[in-house]
Image 1 (cartoon, rainbow, N blue to C red):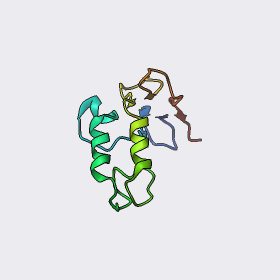
Image 2 (tube, rainbow, N blue to C red; image 1 turned 90 degrees about the horizontal axis):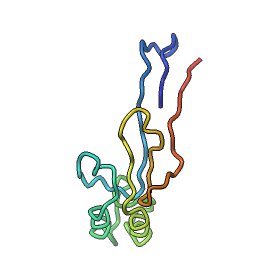
Image 3 (cartoon, helix red, strand yellow; image 1 turned 45 degrees about the horizontal axis):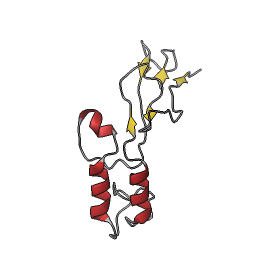
Image 4 (spheres, helix red, strand yellow; image 1 turned 135 degrees about the horizontal axis):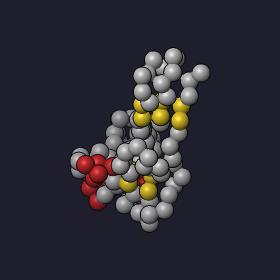
Length: 113
């Protein structure tokens, strides 16, 4: 998201920030680009939590139904290999599937009038 400098924003230069959500990523702490990729570590984390009641903050309960179950495992398996491209300004499409195709998420510009 680009926020333009205006009297309303109080910015002196354009500001760029990115945000996103990668379904199936459990925060396995891979670091670098690996921190934004669904990997075998995410599958393993969900398998370890299978069958347990979980709080709403659980990284393995993707549908937030209070349990880590087959639905959560199916989601992490379906998104295995997906990643978020965080290469910086002008990255364009942020979500890339394992086949290299775009999921249509792009850049936006916020103008506050």
